[in-house]
Length: 130
Image (tube, rainbow, N blue to C red; front, side, top):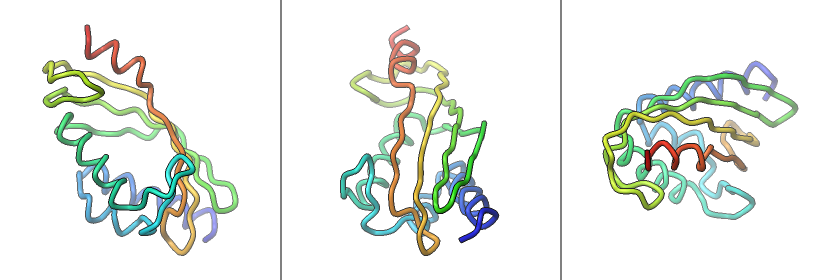
């Protein structure tokens, strides 16, 4: 895939995430996608995404920056949502929070085969705990 196709792939991924359409996200993942260097697979990715959506049912993401190089995508996003369910060990608070996310994707055959990333967990916990 060329740089434009990789950007379009990420656009599709982000739009599916914004719609909370986990089946559309699944179509963009290799079944054996590696996360953080571990062979967890698409099912584990979607379970984690479902847990995030349960905790923040109105979560939305905004693209800050996307960089494409060879078969890789680096993305900086801002997320925001209302804390309606347990997350990171904190029961629902009803607080509206926002956080930064950074992700690095490797794409092959139109699907993510590797992902490494992080969210600002410390900043998010500080907001949740008030």
